[in-house]
Every structure is written in C-alpha cells, then in structure tokens.
Length: 218
Image (cartoon, rainbow, N blue to C red; front, top):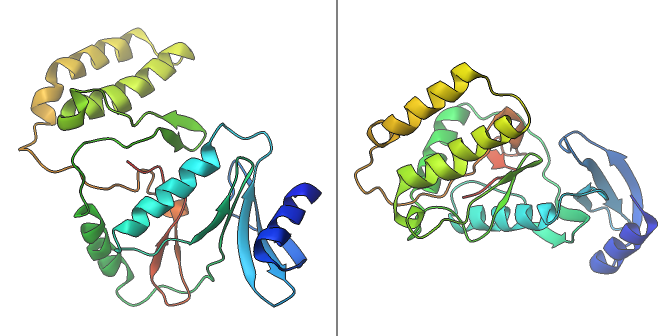
C-alpha cells in the first residue's frame, strides 16, 4: 500500500494504522486487513494499475445489494479510483441450515425489483467489462437485454481475441434465431442480481450466515 493511500486512510478513520497483512480475496487486486491503534480492523483492496472506475462500481454494487435488506454485505467505508475500504468481516463456520437459509435470502434479494432491466452504470465481472446500460428496447425486454449485453457481448470478445471457430459461429447464429423461444418470459419484473455468484464471492460471517462480496450487479 502506497504511503499516500495509508495517509489518506488514517485521515478518513482518524486513527493510525498499526499493522497490515495480506489476505486472500483480492484476485486481480491486493487485499489486506488493516489494524488501527484502537484495535479496529478494516479490509482494503488496492490496485494502482486499476481498470477505470472498478472500485467505484464495486461500491455502488454493494450499496445496491444492501437496499434489498436480504443478505449481508460489507459496509463501504470509503472508495477512490485506486482503493476501496470496507468493513472487515470475521470468518465463521456454516450454520446448520446454511445453504437452505442462503437460498431463502436469495429469494428475498430477487424480490427487490426495478422498472427496467440492466443498471444505471456499466461495471466489471472480474476484469472484463460488463455492459449494463440498456437501449430503449432492452429496458423492457429481458431476452433482448440478455442476448445483446451478455451472450453477444461475450461472443464478440471471443471473436476479437481469436477464440472462435466456424462451428461456434454457426452455433451462435442458430442460438440467435431461437433465443426468443428459449428465453421467453411472461413479463417478469427485473430482479436484482449479484451478477457473479460463485464460491469465491460469498463468505461465512461470525454468525455462520452468508455475506456477499465482489458483485457484478445488474
């Protein structure tokens, strides 16, 4: 962590950082636990060669998940272009009905709805841009949004980077012809999604419950 960042955090917290050590959870970033002179702990991710707006997007995603009041997320304490400072959540062990409870909480999360599909800003899934801002047609058409902003976007990236072959191109054209039937929906409301849910993007807190981290919200 750069001295400038350290000084900035001490100014924000109005405390001195007395110790810091690396932890897992950064993936493409450096992740650390910070200890302060009052005994408090905080979690920080830094990246000085950062993708534009990545930490700001992450903070907005965490705040959006918090609105649903369904699953715990770490509190955003401060965010800038080069770092995000979060509540440090202590790890625990799974409760007896962990996954059943997790599923029920996700059901509540998905009941948090909006008027339109997508999101008010684009963000990232890992280090890959995720395009969320819908065009006028996609706002109210999940099939159109999902095909254009998820499937076709990824296909175009693969094609650009030389990862497609003739068989895949033909299959993708067939999918495009059938996507309306495959993803037909009966006017479901747009539901809040974590967007990048896998085993590395949730943790078990000190009470044995799930906590969501590293979202790619839309």
